[in-house]
Amino acid sequence: MSRNRRKPMARIRTAGAIAAVSLGLAACGNPQGVGDDGKTDAGAKIPSRVEMVIPYDEGGGTDTWARFLEPYLKKHVAGGPTFLPENKPGGESITGSNEFVRSGGTDGKQVLVTSGTTYFQALLKRPEVEFDFSKMRPLIMNGSGGVIYTSPKTGIKSAKDLAKSKKKLKYGGISATGLDMTMLQAMDVLKKPVDATFGFEGRETAMLAYQRGEVDIDYQTTSAYKSQVEPLVKKGKAVPLMSFGVLKDGKVVRDPNAPELPTVEEFYKEMYGKKPSGRAYDSYKAFLVPGCTYQKGLWANEDTPDSIVQAYWDSVEKLKKDEKFAKKSGEVLGGYPLYSGENAEKQIQKAFEIDPDARKYALEMLEREYGEKLGGT
Image (cartoon, rainbow, N blue to C red; front, side):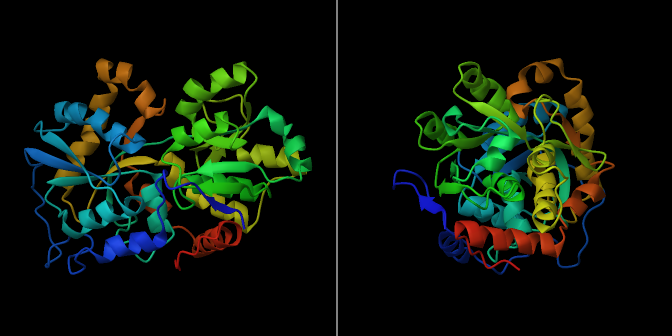
C-alpha cells in the first residue's frame, strides 16, 4: 500500500480522531436545524449580525475566501448585515459543519462556509457526518479548477510517456479524503495510482516538497498554478500534464484559465486511444462536480426561509457589478465567477445525490490504494 505519513511536524488527521471529536459534541440536536413543527417564518429578514461558520483553520484557502467576501457581503446583501467570521476547525471540517447543522438554526443568524473537502466528507457518508448538502440551501458558490504537473526528472512529458512509465510517481497531500481525492481519482482513471504521503498542512507545503524533490507529481488549483507553478515551467523545473477541466452544459471541457492543457479525459484518450469509461471514471465525474464546480460555497440550513435565501442570491449580481470587487477578486476567486443558487438550486442539490456505486467505488479505491477504511456505505 502506498500510504506514507509525514513526520510529527505536519498536521495529521485520522478518521479515529474525527470520531473522537464528533462524539465529544452533544448529539441530541436537530441535524438540519429545523424547528419541531417543520415550519419557518416566510417573511423573515437577515439579522443585523451574521456569523460565518468556517470549519477550517485561519489562513487557509477557504478562510481567505470567506474573509475576502465579508465586507462585500455587508455592502450588497439586503439590510447591510455585519458578517463575523468564526473559525471552528477540526475533523477535516466535520466538527464545525456538524455544529452548524445541529445548532445553526434557520433564522439567518449563521451561514456555513464550505470547500470541496467538506462536501467529500458528506458524499463519502462518513459515519461522523451529520450534514447533507442535498437538503441544505446553497446561497453563493464559487468554482475552481486544478492542474496536474510533474518533475522533468521523471522523464514524463506527455500522455505516451506516462502510459509507458512503470514506476509509481510520488505525491504529497493533505488527506486522502479531502480535495486530494480528486487527484487520486484522476490518477486512478489513468490507471496510474501514486505513492502518496499525506499529512501536509496545505497545497503550498506540498509544492515546497515538490521543489525540494521529495515528491515528483503534484496538483495545484488553477490560480495557484498560474501564479506559482508557471514560473517553474518557464525555468524547466515543472512539466504541466493536464487539468481537471470544468463542467459546461453537463460535459467536462477544458479549463478556460488553462485552455492549452488537455482534460483528464483527453489525456486518457492520448494514453489508451479511447475515451475513459467504467466505474473509476463514473466515480471521478461524480465527485468532480461538487469538488470543483461548487468548490467554495456559502450555505444555509434546510428550511431557511426563501426571503433570507433570496437576499444572498440577489447580492451576487450586485457583486458582479462592483468594480472594486472585480479588481481585487482575481487571485482569491481564482478567475472563476461567483454565482447564486437561484435557478440552479435543484441542480446543485442533485450534484450531491451521487450514485451509490460511485461512492462505493471511491471507498474501495481509497482502501485498496491508500489504506483509508472509512466505514462509509
